[in-house]
Length: 158
Image (tube, rainbow, N blue to C red; front, side, top):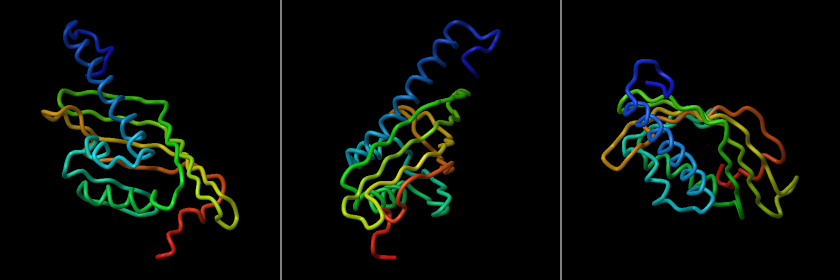
């Protein structure tokens, strides 16, 4: 049910507003968790059996795989800033979908070719309401553009 659906009771419309607010909070918590390298906070954004699709990586299954790729990608960075915007949410009972834009600045000093790289993209998420609140069940990242030195993402292991 969307927030403006005709025929919905006032209580139903209010519930959708609360659900949308809660989902927005999780999206922002996700970005904060990445920048603070707070893996406990990050885990609170996903169901344990979550999956994620990243264009350059492929499909990851299970939260541990998602956390592992985040740790690996962010470990070499001295600082990052992940910003979320243009959030659109559709709630349908205990399930929801959302899309939002991502603007992620990554900084790794002393990298030949430049110290920073920006990734701009779109997250498309599927959500489930759990007893602990809304959690991401499936996330897909579509990169729209990048700017700067992509070499800062190389770990030396590849």
